Image 1: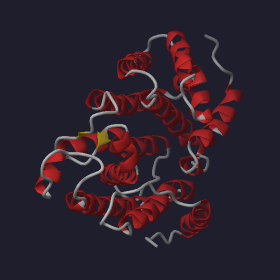
Image 2 (image 1 turned 30 degrees about the vertical axis):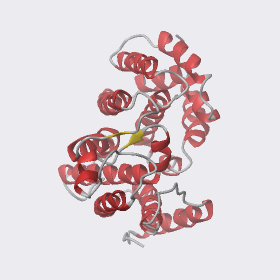
Image 3 (image 1 turned 60 degrees about the vertical axis):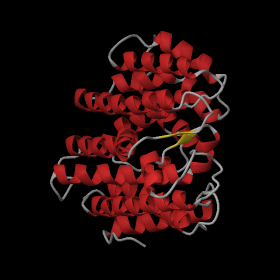
Image 4 (image 1 turned 180 degrees about the horizontal axis):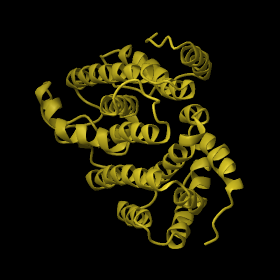
Length: 331
């Protein structure tokens, strides 16, 4: 395999990032240079793995095999066989940006290998946790029917940590290593806030995407919680009685709100204007989504929501003002 030249870093981490992430790209593009490469490459690799896991047109067993190969490459094995299989998987991907990402997977791994040893080790570690979560998901929900739930609150907590909470810890570790003195609080405290913040964003994703997940047989609301909230009989979608569902949703909305509060502490405890801005953008978008979720009526099924582009533009201006002024507080 030919290693891409350094000149390819910007095309890969610029337009391709924008193509696969409308909102997160707003954060990544403004990161301080020492952390931009490891955080951008880790995002692209995580998104590639997530795309593989979500190719519903292909059997879950095939997706698990490719994720195992992905993990093997992270451990140091050769990229070309994975790149060829990922390109074949790309044919079943509808999203053009995600399709291109799988076709350029070898470039992503080449840029991973070009990181400093410390950053390389941290990226490998966090991607290992994320892959654990994806593989468990595919084993829990191998088919679109019947509807399956997570079993317990502990499983939900583990899942949100594996796919997002560990990312907050990783983000903290990378910034502490590459930007010494960037935090005003101890790294352990920042990592704890980052973990809670990441898990809150994932809870918001779960609640926002509940209807779409149910359509493919997935429910991330724990069955034990639904039973405790009064659910009788079979767990089904659409439900005969939405009351238990909304009781559990209210609890998760409250937890997400608490996690976002940790995110505000995280954003306010950084000396870098760029890093503040990068932290504030998903925080503001997550808060706006949470506001919309809390406003949904409770006498019917949850529905998908999306923050509008004009509102995102308003948030960009607000995040920039707060980052520059250091006056960081919830709207």
